[in-house]
Image (cartoon, rainbow, N blue to C red; front, side, top):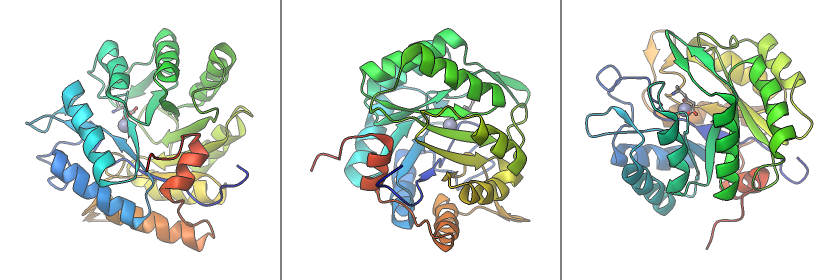
Length: 280
Ligand code: KMH
Ligand code: ZN
């Protein structure tokens, strides 16, 4: 996009899949999440993709907790706050829509149903349209999540049906390597990028698990933006677990900088996504 050069780094610190008992360093409390968010902003992230947990560290879409989380992140960071409307595979569609009532800057919007390991991540067409329209009414910028090549075609249909989202920009994120979706390969990423509608103004990519680094490298070489974080990957290197989200952001910053596309500031990222400047 003219005027904004550099790399948008999104951090997805928690997700809905890993268990705290298995991954104690996963940020599941509000304090842990805000601490990680601050460290990730200092390391080069400009957007945070947020899933929250309840007092027992289980995924929740509780509106009160979501509101408190948005408020705390706004107060203590200048990160763009993107709430997940995907939740966990067990969340009902109405609870996922209600996320928009908690006043985030941005939200995820997955462009179709996909097998998700042994489960199904349901995103029926009428739900996608409803989420799209409610996000526009609430002045929330959607990020279109593309887990499969069919999702790229569904994004085309969504833009034809509903027009441009709030902010007038179209940003999407490839999530590759979910068992059931597109594989985490450069070939799959290239196929996805080649199929993007011309209205798309920016895209990022993330690879699940062992595809994290190959997808990151592929995205950088294709001029894409990056998403990293423990939602997607808990192994830093062979035999070495991730210690914190910040170290994944630090690595992405190093690689993007070497590729002559250093991280965007949060103000630049807001411009890229069509968000108004943060109130002073
Ligand atoms: N947890 C996955 C079932 C999103 O955040 O919008 C869905 C997901 C996508 O993580
Ligand atoms: Zn997510």
